[in-house]
Amino acid sequence: MRLHPIITSLLEQDMYKFSMGQAIYHQFSDYKTTWTFKCRNEYVYFTEEMVEEIREQIKNFCKLRFTEEELEYLDNIKWIKGSYVDFLRLWQPRYEDFSITTDGDRGLSIETAGTWLNTSMYEIPTLAIVNEVYFRMAYDYESLLKSFKERLLEKKWMIESGGYKLGNYSEFGLRRRLSAEAQEYAIEELNSAKTKESVFVGTSNVYLAKKHKLTPVGTMAHEWIMCSGQGNKKHNPAYSNWYALDAWVKEYGVLNGTALTDTITTDCFLRDFQLTYATLFSGVRHDSGDPVEWGEKMIAHYKNLGIDPEMKTLLFSDSLDFKRADMIRKHFEGKIKVAFGIGTYISNDTDVDALNIVMKVTKCNATDVAKISDTHGKEMCQNPEYVDYLQRCIDWRIKNE
Image 1 (cartoon, rainbow, N blue to C red):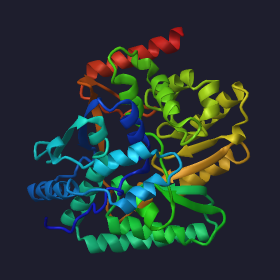
Image 2 (image 1 turned 90 degrees about the vertical axis):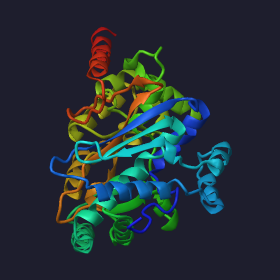
Image 3 (image 1 turned 135 degrees about the horizontal axis):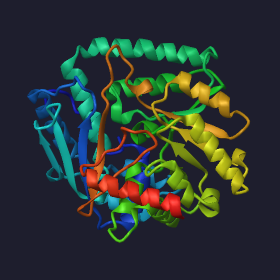
């Protein structure tokens, strides 16, 4: 490696990977998935030197194991079960599951294939590695870090001075961070901010949550609905949310319950998010579409079910900055509880554009899976025919059910 090790602990992972991982271990341990990397930035290019460094960094990540101290930390999280901790005691990433070449549109192609148990755990560290390698090798990193810290301190001043009032918010920036150093700096500064109107409650990065005694935040991602709902060929994919919610409740009951609504559109989600699930889940997460329109739709849905919206939480996590979060909070004040998961704006705001990179599951059990979100352009599937099939299933259900 030309750079220092970027991922130094298997806890350096978004919390929802452990939430989903436990349910995968107990219910879908035989499922196999394929994941595909994509860079959406038009003018970004990865050199051969960068690709080689990414390979070496991922090889180093694959040598890591959980320590007993880390496993004890996970075991003390209320909803994590001892059987899953015992599995993690034996678990290790496999470099053989990775295919990393220079064949991609931007000079980089990454694909992983193997059990869902394994491949799910590769997404976040891989994206963190790609980000840090790119920014350290394509730019003057120290200059970028300087601009990052200056902007971060401006953000801190804006919330301390009352310029923005965010209520409860968390940091969700591991996958797109400038560097490990930058993310930890941001968490330390925001956690020390002196204000009662913007409360920094935690981070999705479990390693940093443990280190700084913060709450590790995260429940489910799109992969959960896509694989549990579409990975079984006998399932009608328009009912993906029902299968996903049913499996989640089987695993957690009333614990750890924030449902993601937009995997196959929120309108389709609401067909399955009826009284039982709407009662059991403490709230829902927004990740695409207009946030105000979505929030009002959720409030109306709760009211139609006879549920007091003020007992529930809307978690917003789509391309947020402090200004946007403050606007959303003001709109919903007195109507429903809100919280925010803020990513790139906290972890990678510098003088240059952040990378818009993703690594999404594209196959489950050798069949295509897809996300059809509330925002056009966030979809990712290698087979347009499957996307068309999925959309027709959704349309038929909404029209005829």
